[in-house]
Image (cartoon, rainbow, N blue to C red; front, side):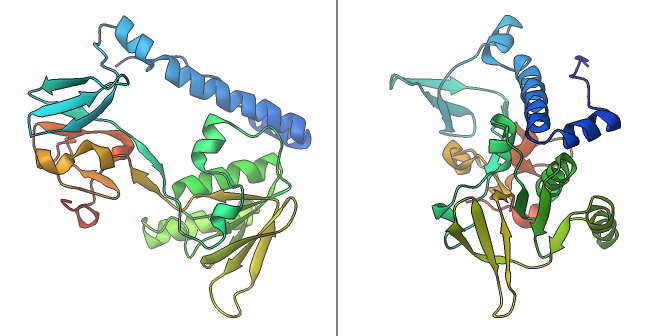
Length: 269
């Protein structure tokens, strides 16, 4: 186990001061997020890995069989790699729903917020999705001073009913977030600096805010790996693994956001 010093977290009093500062407070929070992300990346960058003795091969990799991979480099050259064991850690990316009008508006995802934190606090924010990422970011922006509305049929839908109820109560009654229990069907930009989300159903209404955050799910970054050629079972949520992170091809392991332990959601494509 390697323990690394992490950036100090804001205290409750410091958070209240940041909240009172508006855009200035948002810039302070953005700087903190950037510092935290850079701190983590400094220990897992290519340079850090190489300095610790790890051989790094740069390029795009895909399986050609259960024991071989092909790496295509930026100059077009190809290297074949033979291995006894493999560990896949390709991560995940936001899953963007096919909502009508969504492509015509500027929206955030969790990647935008973490990689390029906003320096101006939105007056109001609509969060599409009630999963862990949506709830976490909704709480963060509400605490910073935005008026946040979550649009989702349920909160933490994969958790137990009790956990859903507790989290919904915290979001609404403790944090002050508005929860609209429904699904979005269309996104409109009717006025500059304003986004409107129409809800499903003839009489379902709409929600208006100055900024939109799409947090409706994530998908594993596995499409280009040719996992089927290695005999690995996978699906949209990632590579199916057991409690020791082994895939259906036992010598191929997966870790992080590219894998799942939920067999009902995985299939061999």
